[in-house]
Image (cartoon, rainbow, N blue to C red; front, side):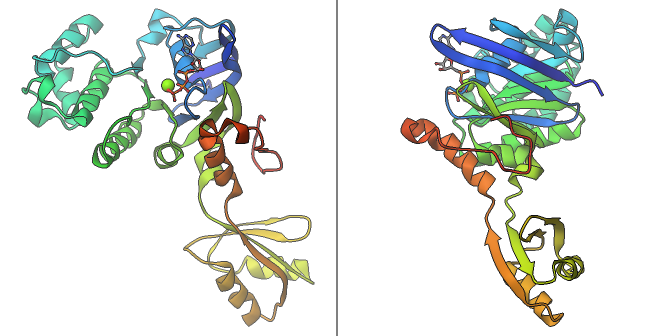
Length: 317
Ligand SMILES: Nc1ncnc2c1ncn2[C@@H]1O[C@H](COP(=O)(O)OP(=O)(O)OP(=O)(O)O)[C@@H](O)[C@H]1O
Ligand SMILES: [Mg+2]
């Protein structure tokens, strides 16, 4: 399938700062794709480049398999910075102006205001809106032309917990309508809650890309070994709360579901006459490493030592 967006070896320098450094990634149709990274890691610059508002130094990007064009740009709705609305005009009147600029029929205005849950307040002046409502109007504005792709840069910045929850719900809802969403965030939690796939940037470099499920399920794994590894594996697979069983060198790595712990698994094995020689629960170290990477911009000295190697996922360290 042709990717919605394909970025190949993209570079952007601002003087000495290498803001985007050999970045390659692909976004497929239907994904909610998170670009995750600490402040200054190049997220906004990357989005700016693929939206043709920032000039790249080298590399390439393709939208819908084609070189960027006015045609492809029409299929993309974007909010890079909080767009400027007229404070004394209502949501409807502000969107009428946007519709005029974009050449979109005004009949779409009602639809998008309903989507973002602003229909009730549609006649109130923009300046009376809360920050969350302003952000929702921005999303409505980006949805006006019914784009295939939505690009959102830090969509929940500055919002209170309820506003954050509303925007996240809205993003999920828009994705369910079949739109592909690309969003930049410095919040692991946000990516985890909203995205299906993600890439991690650090100082302009891609250090990871993959599916959220694979990397960040948050579930722990259990290492288990016994004298008879074959019998162990057979028996473990009969446990009702198994998500996956993967043989590693010295043990099986078992992913449990339903909040089951290593103790529950052990009890099950003992009942079937298996005495384990090794049993240990591992928290998702990958998640911890991401948290360290994301926190690293607060303590630059501690930022270099995060090897993502030896993980059973695609890494581009
Ligand atoms: N117009 C510019 N001129 C000079 N340097 C810039 C410019 N825009 C961005 N940079 C630098 O490029 C790097 C990447 O910035 P960018 O805004 O892309 O990061 P970001 O990941 O979006 O960060 P944040 O989470 O703070 O939004 C930073 O070091 C930034 O200072
Ligand atoms: Mg940014």
